[in-house]
Length: 397
Image (cartoon, rainbow, N blue to C red; front, side, top):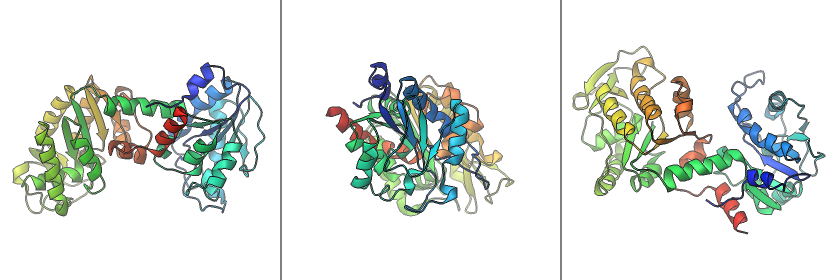
């Protein structure tokens, strides 16, 4: 994917004295008193800011936070907690600028944080007037927020249209490289794990992957729907019976290419959905009418682990069972550890997936962990993200 990279501009000496506008993803969780409870996104934004400062730029950074009402600033929508954390991480004060659209005072070697961009009227609808004002603030626009790359908003898309120079920051560039390696030019076999509660939310992803992957592993409620499609009883498990035909079509599409969707041979069931429910391992063909399937069984988990160990590329989105409940976490743990031990290039994304990676302490063993939930899913669907599209257009001149 041909995009201009901020790192290249810096190394070419084209950033000194320039006004640089960085769109970061600083949308962090806050507690009731407004303190940050998890600062991964703030820490991930630091390399781009430091790169700009080291290159001698006058640096402006902005992000959205939460879901503010456009045109109505409320204290709970403020990036003040982020400004405090950024100041600590950068070892310098990061002033927070409130009304910034019509002008920002910042000198080379300085950095300011611009207040929540979604408070600006016209942000979400990508108002050309707002985007042009933002573009006028800077010489170089840097998109470094993959989590917003699937949205065409004024601070993510419009500004990239009108800025003198528009480029990808190091975080976004890393996402582009990882996605290209995993999906555009994968080392085979390519194995995709798509799990979650509903087929309907990931049906287009499953269809798109069925055209490209060598193995499609399904888990969670999605696997239950595929079990239905294979003629198995799933009791009262979460599934979408009306989409069994769609699941069958995915199975047939894979089969026609000599690929496969492995259907579980054993499962872990319970009578109630609860952390303390009694877990029973059963053959997939022996599920009772009052059973809930809450995990894949050990035999299935071992078979999947074996496949994953011989993979060339692994794309992972979603845990294969209710891994939050210890008794139903073993399938996800087995799959997660197999991915970690594999020599394959592995890319993982989605909130629950990241929680599983953290739970099993395998962050260093996954080749690339994607920072964008919705954006990652849209990439798996085969969609061209608006951020990638506009940066490619600008790179092409």
